[in-house]
Image (cartoon, rainbow, N blue to C red; front, side, top):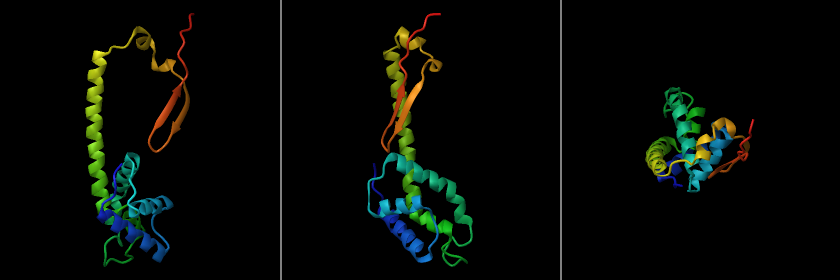
Length: 157
């Protein structure tokens, strides 16, 4: 969880103001994101990843006419959407945090593999193939994913 910075809050407010003034630009999700940013809400890691994904996909919008002040059609729909997600400040912020998350994941993966060497699987765990497991239910929230598997039972042929 991380809080947005002042540059993001300012840009998101600009996006909301433009959206109201021009009646266009961005999506409902973008407007919700802007309100979260302006309210200085803690943003979850998943939200930060979604932000980085948005910016990565929409970098191309910066090349379109109307993205920059002084151009015909300013602010373009793409410019308004960019602002709603926190603008350039949001892009650099989310990129930095996602890169840090990846480093943390790599360290955890390295730790997990070292731990597995210390605690080898028992014979039952070794014999269980992925094909033997059946997913019964998947529940997802902003913070967790719970996967329920059918209990594995050996069947003699």
